[in-house]
Image (cartoon, rainbow, N blue to C red; front, side, top):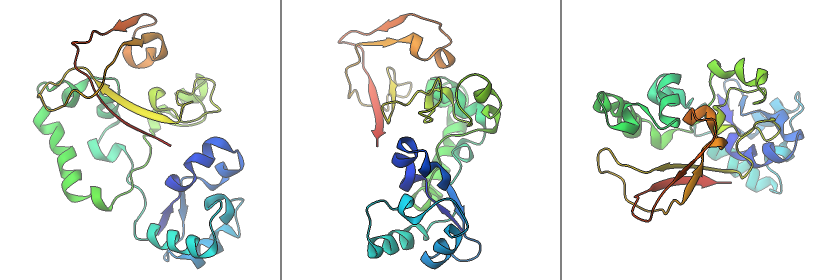
Length: 217
């Protein structure tokens, strides 16, 4: 069994170098329980205090039992199936975002995951083999994150200094999104790798619909 630590240590991973020693997944072998976790940590540089800061023994035992109900986290790329599909969507394009030819087939993949796997899955942060050489060589850190979802705060060009992730849509190809946000402007120079524009602004009026979803930690 593999115990995911991503949700536990993400705030501390971003804040302290020591917590980075824990990594996103701890392989516990054939048994997933507190004893197995303590045994695994006894031979690593990660400590139980880093994984469960401020928690007492009873709280730690309860949290581990809950986490052990899950298997290893689902890699984000598994949901749509390829890096290119994810990349297109994150950049605001592709069949799912545009509602163009292939929309039904591409959204069917998402629906299958929602119907069959989502409730019992932990989904890992988007990370890709295709970025593992490019990112270190271009100032995005030693990782495989997309440039607009880069949570490496130590990276020269990390893009997640506010601990916030948000996706906004200004049009709904299938009229499926509710206008829930007022967007004033967008500085295009903040994301040239996604919008393929070196500099400039997008300016929106009160009449432009916008739908935003996101979370912070």
